[in-house]
Amino acid sequence: MPQSILSHEFPNGLVLVAEPMGSLESAAFTFLVPAGCVHEPADRNGLAALACEMALRGCGSRDSREFIQALENLGVQRGESISAMHSGFSGATLAKNLPATLEIYADLLRRAHLPDDQLDAGRQTVIQELRAIEDEPSHKVMLELRRRYFPDPWGRPSEGNLEALEAVTMGEIRNHYERLFQPRGAIVGVAGRIEWEPLVDLVGRLFGDWRPREVSPPVAGPRGPRRDHLHHDSNQTQIAIAYESVPYRHPDYFQASGAVGVLSGGMSSRLFSEVREKRGLCYSVYASYHTLRDQACVLCYAGTTSQRAQETLDVTLGELRRLAAGVEPGELARLKTRVKSSLVMQQESSSARSSAVARDWYHLGRVRTLDEVGQLVDALTCESINSYLKRNPPRDFTILTLGSLPLQVGD
Image 1 (cartoon, rainbow, N blue to C red):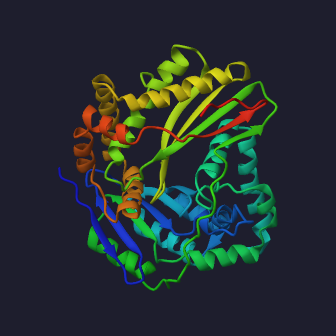
Image 2 (cartoon, rainbow, N blue to C red; image 1 turned 120 degrees about the vertical axis):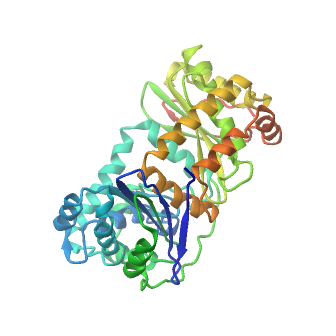
């Protein structure tokens, strides 16, 4: 059954984009509000995360407890996230409960209480999430890698830092909320059992008079060092590597993503089989794609013992460089099978599709249907990927290690 993507832009700049999925009984939504961490002051990294936490502590006619209870009564499974550009709010529920749920989220996005007497509790919640990273060195090294790879503020970790979080005031939170929680640049993606015209009317009633504001775009600062080491007393060493790639909106994205899928994405992938399985060098190794709107990179991670860390780094870099020689038919076939399986799963998930349609609209100004994505995957060939790799071989690596001793990196 062909997919249909529907969109409507309101006069205040808010975009509603939806994908009806009549075979489901659920409906899901994803709000992307242009209030990400790139808009934080340089000395207030974590402000966006704390503002998000405080916005959940009562809105409209409901206090914090009543807000939670109302969503639970509607059976809403919700989530929040902070990225470079956006504060994200998502949820899924029975389709019949979507209108009442969106009314609550209109209060959250437009009429949050931001109660002074809950600032300490909200701050401690965010700080505990930050401190949990210290117990997960693999997570920490990847956050710090992005900070060094991308120019500030695009590489800032959404979790922030302890000094900044402890210094944030309620006035700064209110200013962040009032200035950046606004419709211009905001996107709401909806998927599931929906009726389009009533949905447009509902969103227009809830958000049509939301006042837009002018916000200056962030100014890019310098990148971090291409080689760095973080000291950490441990018998393990965390290795993080990044190199340039093309963003999601680029015509070569699927070629670049296909190459990464050969590197990592299963027990037969190159990094797993060459670095872990054949040589037993590490307990974890992978590569992933990280894309912003206008820049992107491939992120690689390996966790190993201090004694085998140098060899692990050398072999991993060797595999990244060897990728430029090209992929083979068997690798491409396995890649296509994995991607097709993922597309089938998306067809059965309103949550996955609401997130995807909102993301696509942000990156592309339109939405790729699953059928279109499937056709783009089918069109991948060894020749097309290898041609991309010949023009764009993995190189100019940014390398960060975390452990007791730094490692040697050749040019």
